[in-house]
Image 1 (spheres, one colour):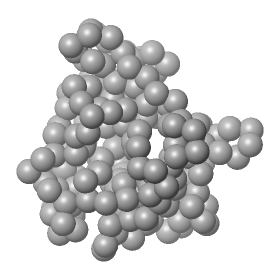
Image 2 (cartoon, one colour):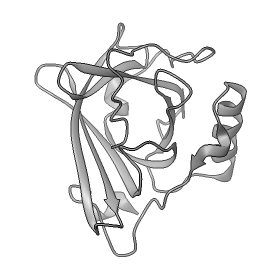
Image 3 (cartoon, helix red, strand yellow):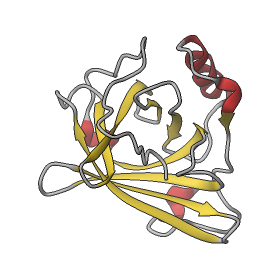
Length: 179
């Protein structure tokens, strides 16, 4: 699922990507909605995708990704864990959904209010636009596409899945947060 990076030991980042500095983990925790992505098998066919981040007792970040699979008419969920690659004030993390295998998770742009985030994986095949709400302004969408294009990502392969299903709230998300 979202950021289920099956990238064995790949914690680098694409050329030109700089992780956000001055990152505040506590402000980033909570639920994010997937607005756009470069599609991969672990997310293919999913809509209304959310990523929820919470702090574990051991200091790691719990990652719960959920999305609706229209073909099976069911919610899919994956649980993983994330750790900072180095400094917790630099938004460069490694995420694992499969044992000891980690993939890179780089926040390279973040709204001042932590209301949207541009994310990259270890190469230009992995990118996401996440937001605190199911919709963002056209300005943010255009900025995301422009930044990806400037950085060598294939913007013609971006998909913009449905962010919310009618009369449906994903499990674990309060109805007020899903609006």
